[in-house]
Structures are given as C-alpha cells and as structure tokens.
Image 1 (cartoon, rainbow, N blue to C red):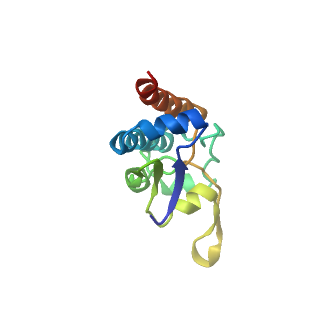
Image 2 (image 1 turned 90 degrees about the vertical axis):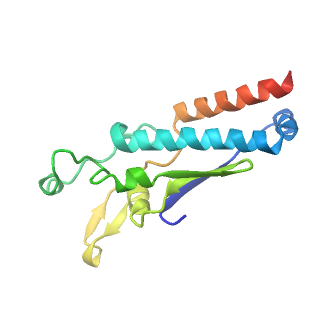
Length: 151
C-alpha cells in the first residue's frame, strides 16, 4: 500500500501465545479482522471529527492563507473526503495493516515540504496510530476471544 500505513502484529506473553495457538486460523483471522475494522473506524473518526493525533495532541491549524481557499464544509485533512474514504485495513493471520494509498497521505502523517519547489511546509497531522482508547478496545477484543479458549 503506497501512501502511509502502520502494521501491528499481535504478540505477547507465553500463555497468550499458547492460547492464540489454540485458536484456529479462522479464529485468529477473525480477531485480526475485528482489530483492523476497529482501527479503520477509529482512524476515520480521527480525520473526520477529532482532529487530534493518536496521542491526543491537537493538529496544527491551517496557515493564515489556507482558509481562504476552502469552503465552509472543508476542515483539516477533509476537502473532498478522498483521504478519509481511502483509509483501509488488511489483516492476515495475526497481522493488521491500516493506511491509505493516496500519494499525499504520508505528507499529512509526518509533515514536510510540498508544492512547487517544495515552497510549502505542511505540518505533521498524524492520523495513523494507536490511541489509548484504541489499545483498550483491542485489549478487550483479544481478551474476549481468549476467554473462550482459556475456559
């Protein structure tokens, strides 16, 4: 996937790994799929309404000149919803990838120089990553799946 992405691999203590081993591959695929769906929804929410990085820091506002080029319905990282609708997840086994294939996705994630002669500085506005709430939700998903196996 071009653009920007993060990759997570579910791993942990030996008992958890043994329990994961007792999960059938279909169960592990389902768990990873659910984690991917959760992170995709969380990332889209972050872009659409929260306007905060996964660590909770507010994104840098537009430059003074930028709002003049936007319509009222536009907001940070949302003009025509291309980035928002490009967020996808892919899971395989215990691995989940989430990101965007948009060519400009990375510049918004990490910031940098853009435009003609790289004359414009775009501040980082991280949208990919795990928030504390994401981590708790993933923990709950995994704990629920493992509870069935460990009984």
